[in-house]
Amino acid sequence: MTKSGHLTIVASSKDDDDAEKSTRLITFLGKGGSGKTTTAVFAAQHYAREGLSTCLVTHSQDHTADYLLNRKIGNVPIICSNNLSAARLETTKMLLDPLNRLKQADAHVNMTQGVLEGIVGEELGVLPGMDSIFSAFALEGFIGFHGNAAQRKDNDKFDVIIYDGISPEETLRLLGASKAARLYVKYLRSMAEKTDLGRLAGPSLLRLVYEAMISSSNGPIFDGKLSSEIWDYIETFLERKSSAFAQPEKFGCYIVMNPCSKINVDTAIRYWGCTLQAGAQVSGAFAIASPHFRGEPVESIKKSFSPLPFAFIPNLSMDSPLDWDAIMQNSSSDDARNLLHLSANRTTSNVPLVKYDLPKKSITLFMPGFDKSEIKLYQYRGRSELLVEAGDQRRVIQLPREVQGKVAGAKFIDRNLVITMS
Image (tube, rainbow, N blue to C red; front, side, top):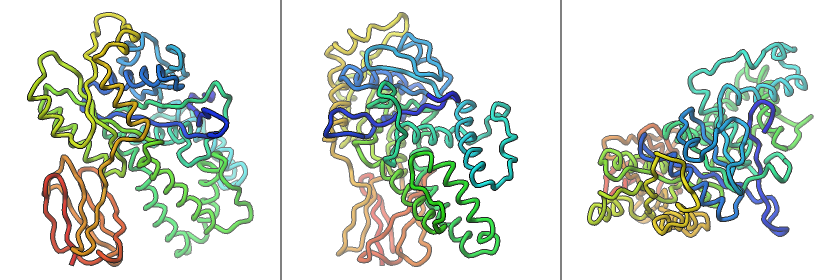
């Protein structure tokens, strides 16, 4: 961890033939009170006992994780047990590292003529929206989704990061941030290349942003190169980062619910659909076990989440410190541990985000948790793209030439939105 409190964790190598293997990021989505933090701690304990160097990263002032681990968690990683560490992200401390990198880049580019150097990061407060932005910076810093994580000592490396975010909405925005940023970059590039102001200020501003945000991650040096080469690299960088959320070997997302509450279950299904709409896959669903919930209701909930694998997490008592050795060895934990192990070995069958029927000129989107009235479809700049708005996410779909055309109709069939083109 840096002096600013910013975590820097990199890929771990299990053997000489698999050097620089990526750290895997695991996160959980669920309504408040669903057991999201409990499930995150359970997963961290599981992976640590599998022999994987694991770090639980929480971005909340809620002390549930502290209680479950029987440790006080701070912004410096603490060792909880063999292979398991824990740390708490705090935005006020995380903003110091990007600011220092920006100052270093400005010292090289000299765009602000030293004005940035006078800004004291410790004086700055947290503005709305900063949590999502700096969570993304922190995760990129220690996961290295683009393949260029900074090098650290061996004892700072982790195989698995369990991320317990502030809220599901913040985590969903984080998942879709790279794709959204690509669209902003696309339009900023057009402005920089086609306007007088952009041609005047664009090159210096672009180099400042590049050096501050990317070159610190061992990106290529562009001294003397054209701005177009830097733009191309930034777009490729964002594409690799966004695509990582669809790769099971790099990212796993699980839905968590309280099965005794219908609104809790319905919200969990909604988060499943939102995750798919954000461009990521869901690896499975968990529910907190209850002695009052068994039999037919269990089968009904499993059917609601089919084809996702489903398992129960043991209902843990909060009245006294927990014996995790006994919990993990209990047969009631077997299904949950098997689900985590199954997903980690990438044998979980994922639902295709988009399916095309070329002869019928149709597109099928799997969208659990939504209905037709909540979805809007847009087409811009010809008809090669389809923008799908649902919930708080927007997704742009590149259409194959065979199905390009004008939207002729759309209908819901068994959680699938079927769009027909003319």
